Image (tube, rainbow, N blue to C red):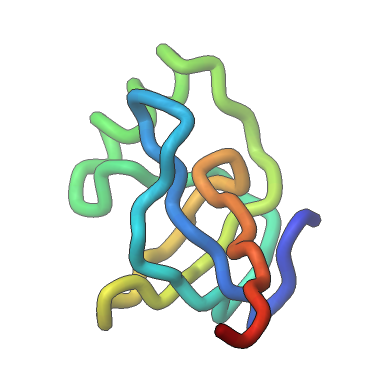
Length: 85
């Protein structure tokens, strides 16, 4: 497990080494399968098979005021701590 409840994280970009600017808050951690298509189980299952993704640590997060469920650990990066400016 890379992150714990209460950690601040950022979403990794799918296309490059950047990440989204808004921070997200981890609100739950558990073992399971990530979900990319929330309302289409068949498409999600096909995507998991195509990408050869197995069960692992997944996270529920609050991102931009919305709860996102079953987010893969691979899709998150830690927020870097910054000192006072």
